[in-house]
Image (cartoon, rainbow, N blue to C red; front, side, top):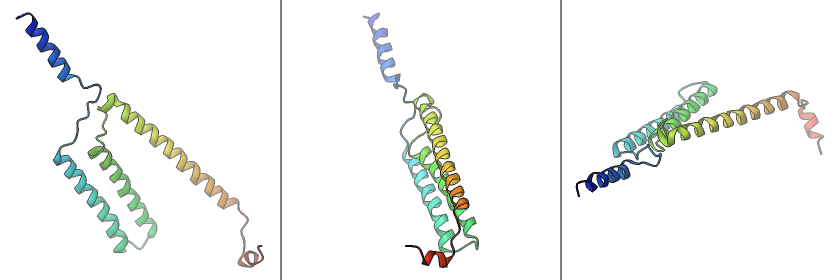
Length: 133
């Protein structure tokens, strides 16, 4: 019986210690509340920037809103999606990087095409627009 007890205990420890490659644990109440409070703050600041007309420049305001939006995306990924370099053996981070590269290519290509369409379109005066069918 003593020979079987260590084997049984090893099997039990192996069973409980095995995580099937899912090293990322679920969040605690504290981490969810931290993420929630950060999300509220990162939403309230851009709202205040727009409603309070803090800056005269609309471009600066829009740029700050985009920065706060990007920060909020990171907060959501860390606190709610539990993404880190250890989860899923690093594959979630690789998938995220691949997705960001594809999104960057799509956005940059779209902006490039729209810029060149705008630059190469024939300008029309209001009189020309009146004569359009």
